[in-house]
Length: 348
Image 1 (spheres, rainbow, N blue to C red):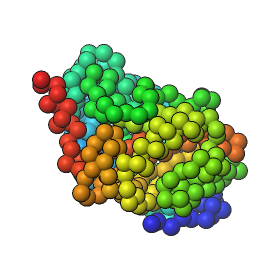
Image 2: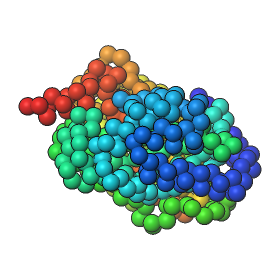
Image 3: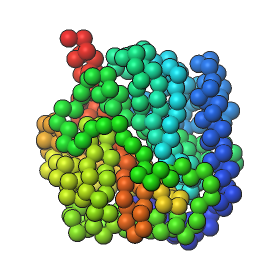
Image 4: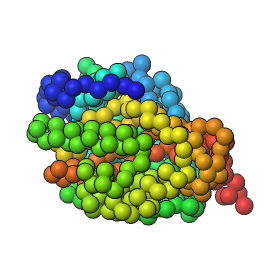
């Protein structure tokens, strides 16, 4: 498991001016990328990321280490399928990575990409109507270059919007996920470093509690770091839950009863800014599906989960939590190709 930088060292690593510079770099990158023609996408990525760019995307894209290939495999097909794209962020923040093995200053953006779903994408049938791709993106920045990107996106949500439900045993609620209740997640300005530290401390406490209990999350443990009215915005296929008791009933209970031998692998990136913070792993967890989780049977081997958590802190508690899980990859490791199953359903 990766080691953590001491919090005081973390807060002294990069100045707020560095954060502001890096935020501007990412905002400029988004403006140029979103305006670029299909033929200019690769050149735009390379201008900001260089030729040694390392990109992580969810299944079936996975890891790509060439800007041209990122454009060809992900951005061009996506932009062809979704026209008149709008990027609609809900959370935007920067900070120093506390994971010592990886380190660096990172910028994170979470929200939706809205477009007209005019052509099929990954076999998902187009609707000719508005569609939202929920996403969260982490960028590692060094010397004015985007060295790494991890882009998580909710492909099953697009399936649902197209009328195809790949996960009929969803235990939470499904809807288009909103941003923060407080509408203050776009941290374009400098943030109070004391508030940043409080958020990171609270996230660390929550992670320590979770891992020390073997991922059990008993009610009294959650109540030490989570607001009683915590909203857990899970991915499509699991769904969202409101309040600690309903979270335990609608997600934590099914998760623990259907998955065994859970191992926490740590994170690649974890940071906070102001009242917001989050992390991603690659993978975060390894586990043995014992049967029943999301309606799927047991499997003989283990499977990895790639997960993102984004949090909003309210005072001494975490009040909102946005989750992304690469469920297509999780089930692909178990011999279940969700995209292939969907294509079969759509042909009948």
